[in-house]
Image 1 (cartoon, helix red, strand yellow):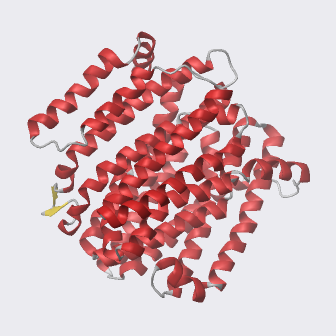
Image 2 (cartoon, helix red, strand yellow):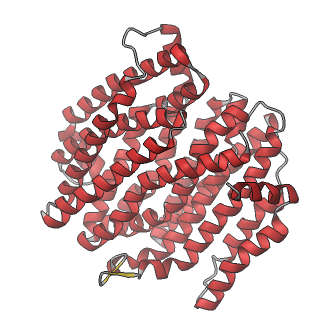
Image 3 (tube, helix red, strand yellow):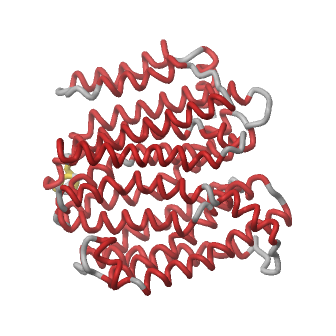
Length: 473
């Protein structure tokens, strides 16, 4: 598997991931024109809870499914898939039952409002969301790009269509959002169910395999929890210090800034199977170094472009309405800051080969907790001082801390000789655009200058050759 193959895989599965996440961006104009800041703040807390709860529902089994689906074959592979799917089904039903039974007591703490009926909706959504992702992971491990993207698109279009029906035409508000999600998630799950049924055999259960899978998956549970603390604590702290309206405004900016996360995760979908297969072969470290330079350069450019043009993007007129409701234009500075944060998340993801190849996954929770603690501490200090921008700056600092933590550990056990000029080039530009850049001419100049200088001075000859091979598909 070459860099060119990685580029193809990242592009194919990245498109699928982008399509799956696209619903976040497509629905944002609808929500910002329909809901008040307080209503959108409540909805954001509901989604924040679902993100956290999905980590509990999966408890690392999704990562285990990907690993063993790639590395095993034949009947042995089916054994692993059967055990993982069975475990997810049983625990999914259990967790959903617990949420339903405790809805009267947990609603106000989780959602900020006393709506037990919302907890019922969320418990059902969580079950189907945790399950329909599994057949897509199997397709990804088998490099079946067409069906993978097809199911992702199905989820996007169905969710979008149902939101328009329930929220816009039928005026059901936040409950309409939940109903749309339940129908979309359950439909995609049942349609994709044959993928699972063809690969499992119910008589397969070996305690030794279950213990092996569980030991591999378990460290990803606390890692996932700390990841979600990073994703969610900023909004809960904002709600505590400033109120739901500021949560809504901040969440709108963070949703747009999550374009950066979408790019990183799209890349990671090709990156993980690539380094799992390539990691122990000759020349792997050299390739990883080249990929680091190319990925960070491209990621930096995406971050730069969206950051400097976001004010124009938000005010684009579509059908007589701006893309983002004017009530939410105040979130503009959040977008560029969050994008920078996800750039540094990219510097973390690109260093994961050392963790997997040297089998030090028990360190993953420690990397994540360093980021989570940094975010909480910085948020507590900065939010009272500078408002919701304090939360955005805390996100950036947290990802920097996490990236440094993984670097100092993996550099000792799996050192890679990076092209540091290529690494720091995008960081320099991201620092540059933190100063206000007004006017079309300066923005166009920077947009054109970045790729020219990057190709001319930041990357090496070997990296240029790799880029050319990547382009010549």
